[in-house]
Amino acid sequence: MQLDERKKTILLAVIRNYLETGEPVGSRTISKYTDLELSPATIRNEMADLEEMGYLLSPHTSAGRIPSDSAYRFYVDSMMEDKEREVTEMKDMLIERQDKMESMLKQVVKVLAQNTQYATMIAAPKAKGSKVKFIQLSKVDISHILAVVVVEGNVIKNNIIEVNEELSDETIFKLNMLLNTNLNGLTMDEISLSIITKLKSQAGSHSEIIAEVIDAVGESIKGDEDLEIYTSGANNIFKYPELADQQKASELINAFEEKNQLNEILQDDEDSENRIQVYIGDENQLQSMKDCSVVTATYELGDGMKGTIGIVGPKRMDYGKVIGTLKTLQNQLDDIYREKNEKGRP
Image (cartoon, rainbow, N blue to C red; front, side):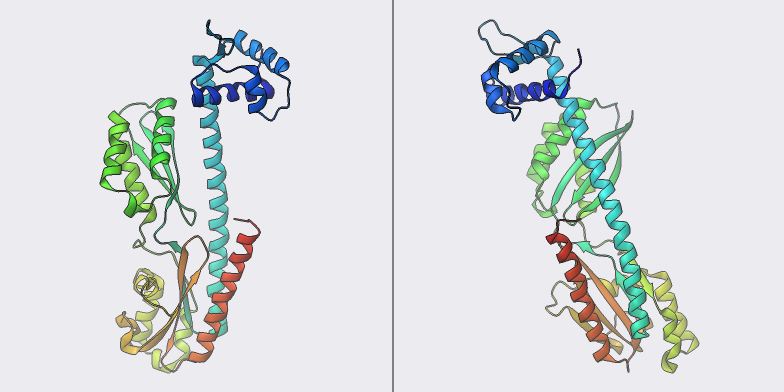
């Protein structure tokens, strides 16, 4: 006899009710506990079938039933399947979202260069002060597990963790429950030494896995890592005689091609009250841009996600046009993501 959907629903209801109360579960309790709208008599027949199949046991002292080991196995496997499905769906959604964002940012920086006729750059948004949303461990092979960490802003980090022994499904399930129960909703600053010590103690012989997951959380949350930067219009520099000197132009083009130097320009200034900043000549941090003006603007995409746009041109750049363009772009990006949030889209 196979477990149809009705039997599965009743079995899960019995298990959950027993986990909550520790008391044998009767058919009348299940008739109130589920949305099946079945009579106690029908449920009683289904529970009798489940007992015959080895999923329920009848204590001698009660007319109610309790889960068997097979029932607990079914419960754990069902929960693990649900969690795996949730992670897969979330990863697919995030990959799609990231692909769309990358395409949008490349288009934004290209249009910005065309409209201003200056060199432009944009840093992909990063979340700051993020909280842990979800952690999922899953088995890769005998000696490795995959740790998926999702933080606010839907930033996702995958880490392969080496293990000394093959972990059972039950162990991975317990570690997932332990991590999510204790870490979800916390920022990295809130994950104190006492919390980590408690987690390691409860994990027992698997404490090293906890340590590596905490490291993965830190990697996902930290905001000082290299930014993903998109650039366009670097050749516009040659249009301005004061920047067309071979050495100066070469240094500027190199900065745009290497991109790692641009991190200093596009790091968000948390202390700045003005979302648009103008740096003229020697005010610029990069030596290669001492003969230029750089205008930067921060933009927000919700969920604590912030990024920076930058425009590089001669000191005689059209500041009014550049600042106006950036303000318009800020508002457009804010509006796009506000509309998506209101419609409940990712």
